[in-house]
Structures are given as structure tokens and as C-alpha cells.
Image (cartoon, rainbow, N blue to C red; front, side, top):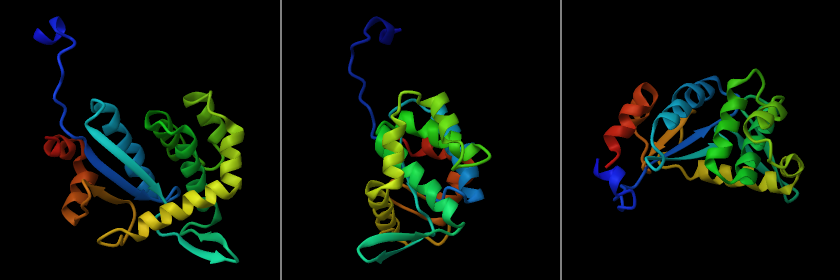
Length: 192
């Protein structure tokens, strides 16, 4: 009962486990991992145990056309739009605890690109819709997608599929399998 009697005692916190998810907004396996595994694990863990970075890009390709970035996505233009919406949500919301439920909402619904308004009403009614729209339709969204392309291209080893999961800066087949099969157990095992 010492903690309840001395609430101001410093708690020596261990560093959180770092998880980066490289994914595509319309990839079925990515959606399943994000919705069924990653989001539910995040909800179950105390804050400060798991630090998640989401990188929506995956197997897309970018090219510079007359000084502007152009993107080709594995599942077509709608996926590029979905990736851009999610990148812009992260940019505008800034706070992970605000944008992760929004991305969960988009990925768990029937349409990643058409449910933004409904998801915003439920999870972030105060988020400025005009700023999100300006990001998606403008240079900021393109810059964010280019940044995600660079992060994805810099992976070592290079990604071979999506979802591609990196834990504490490392990707191995074994870590990937453990993350997909028992993420909660893996995080609890790795957390110091």
C-alpha cells in the first residue's frame, strides 16, 4: 500500500518498447494486424510501455515528375489517398492517443477513404477538418508521403512484404512472427 500513501514517489520507468509498423491503408493483412492486434495490445498496456510509429506507405513507388512527387500504390489510387489521409491525421493531431483511435476507426470500417468524417465525429470532434483536407490536397501531404517513402526505403533489411514490423530497431522473421501471433506477450517479454 506504499504507493497509495506516497503518490509522489518517483517511479523509475524503463524505456518503452519501440514498435514501427510499415503498412498500406488497403492491405488486408495490414488492416487485420493494426485493428485486431496492435490497437488491442496498445489499449491493454499501461502508457509508457509501448511507443508505436505508424508509417503508411508500404509497397508504394514514388517518382519525381517535374519537381512534384507522384505515388503509385499497390492497391491503386484509393490506397494512396488512404495513406495520405492517415499521414495527414498524424501530422495534424500530433498526439498519438488522438490519432491512433482515428486510424483504427478508418482501418476497421468498410472504407478507409470514405469514413473520415464519421471517425472524426466519434474520436476527435475538435480536430480541424479544413486543415486535414488542406494537408491531403496540398504540398504538406505530398511531403509527408515522401518522408514515409524515405523511411520505408531506409529499412535494413529492406522490407519484402507488409505489414513489416520493426521492434526496438530490429526486424527478423522471428520477431515478425512473435508480433503477429502474440504481440502482448512479446512486449511484456521485451519491456525491461
